[in-house]
Image (cartoon, rainbow, N blue to C red; front, top):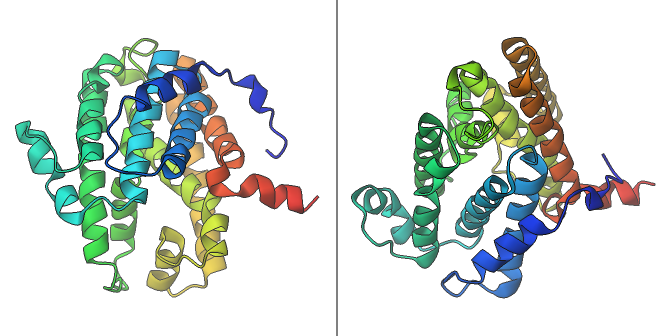
Amino acid sequence: MPGFDSSLYGDEVDKLVRAEVQTWDVGGVSPSHLEECIVTGADLGKIVYRHTSVETQVQIALWTAVLVAIDNFDVDAAATAEFAERFHIGQAQLHPLLDRLAGTLRRMHEFFHPHSAAIIVSDSVQCVSCMVVDKENEERGSHPASIEYLTYKRLHNGLGDGYAYCVWDKLHFPDLSAFIQAIPETSLCFVYLNDLLSFYKEEVVGERANFVHERARVTGKDVQAALMDTLNDTVDAVNRGRRILQDGPERSAWEGFLEGYVVFHFMSPRYKLKQLFESSD
């Protein structure tokens, strides 16, 4: 996907996202750090979900930006640990970014089927909880029989279900039954493609606390074999998804999502893939 023309995507989503973020209290996050979150969110919204309305793309972009900010800038662990309880009882959060996330989640019903919105909200709450659990358990090794737990954990801390349901917004796809059976495959594609396409940037900085390295440790394989196993699992999920969705607008939206997700990783500076391929020319 190197050389993909970014001019195919308009500036409207970027402008709307930036206008909204300017109203946020971000709790002292530096402008340069916040910029990275804005770019990642806007790119994901307008590239991966370009088949949805501009308003939906903006909502996904804002949701993504605030989640990246919470994850990147190490919101106080005590504040993060209380997010779920405070969200459920409607209390103010202990950090402005967490308040912003809560407000964003409460608008999901405007863009997605009621069931879809409920899953997006619950998956987001679980993701924040996983940030706490993952840090508490980062020194503990994985059990040799825990390969299913690795996938379970990855789906939750990677928001697999949440981003899967975003593929089919309620404006264009009001019939939940037309796509719900493909949600498991879409969730796996979302997290596994990210694991594959973010692997380079993580290897460059020597990061080992990721799904591929954990998979290698649990299975007793080398990292290259674990990477190929993840690729094969992704291909299998794609093939199953195509069989489930067959032909029609739901399938077309899904194919566009997959293509856009790959393009997003090559275009986003976060993943460093563009510079990798440019340097190899």
